[in-house]
Image (tube, rainbow, N blue to C red; front, side, top):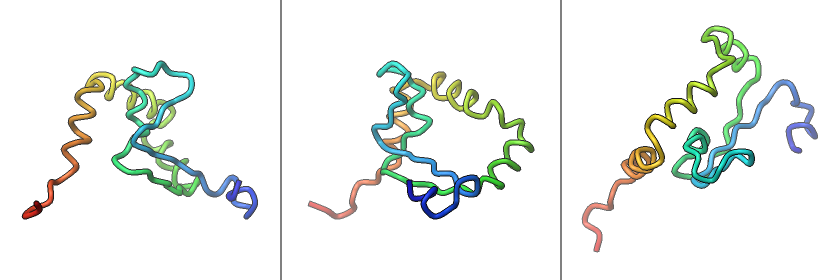
Amino acid sequence: DAIDARGYRGAIQLATFHPDYRFGDAPAESSSHWTNRSPFPVLHLLREDDVERALEARHGDDVWRRNVDVVEEIGGDGMRARRDACFVEEIGGD
C-alpha cells in the first residue's frame, strides 16, 4: 500500500469512487452503492485531520448512514438519471 510505504498511515486517507462501485457486503441491486459511484474513476486523497474535524463539527459518525438513506430514497433509477445528466452531448458533432 503506497500510503503505508511512504509513512502516511494516519495522515492520509484514500477514498475511491467508480462508475460501477459495489460494496462487497450489499446486494447487487442496493442503492447504497451510489454513495461511492462517480461518472469516472476517482482517487481522492483526504487529510485525516481534516476528516476528523469535519466529522466532529457535523456529528459525522452517521454521515455514511445519511448518505445511504438519501440515495435509497432517490433510488437506482433516480441516481442513474442524475449521473446521466452530468454528461453533455457534443455540440456540432456528427
